[in-house]
Amino acid sequence: MIELLLEPAKFFARKKDESPRPWIAYLYVLAATALGMLASQLAERNLPANLGFSGAAEWAIYAVGTLLTSLIVWGILGFLIHLLTGLGARAFEIAGWAFAPAVVTSLVAVAVAAVFPIQGDIPPMPEDPAELRDWMNTYRSVLQSSLFYQANRVLGLLGSLWSAALLYLGTKTFAEKRAALVTGIYLAVTLGLFLLGLIRGWA
Image (tube, rainbow, N blue to C red; front, side, top):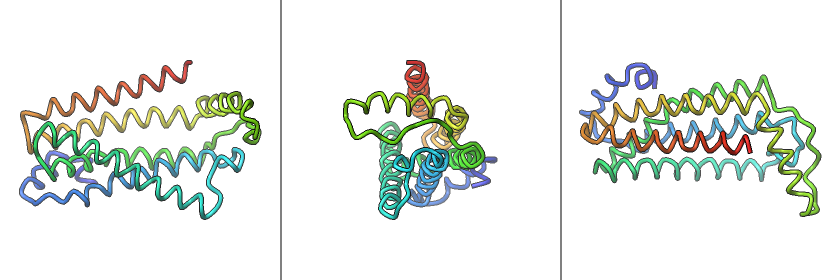
């Protein structure tokens, strides 16, 4: 992982002579997803108990959700790369490698969550559906004004830009003429989601 992050050109050149092992690369996606979800749960530990995972059943849901989310995200990105390059299994391997920066930024997010948990006056979730909308607005306001939320958003953007660089170098190694197209689409979606998050936060 160190070589992938710090010397990606060397890493990809070495991998060019090896057979693709997409499921090994998928572990980056799984680790990044698990750490990201853990950071969120850790950040919300001081909020009402019914907002977090406090029992075995809830943690089982967390584990299944982590697995499914990581597989879906990996599958979408890998399929997109394959669709544009025809690289097959190598496309899914590149998609997995692109998540290595997210492992780093998610580890930082866990540290931020541990030191700066979200604080806010949020009452227990109401049972009356008529009161649920106001409660959700209060909950969202507390989350979006927290240091963790702001830091996590910046970390996410930095990680995505770092991932774009790896995605470009990886695709260029195996399908040079398609690298710019793949990376451009990835950046367009990433920046679009980031701007959408900003707009929703201001709304």
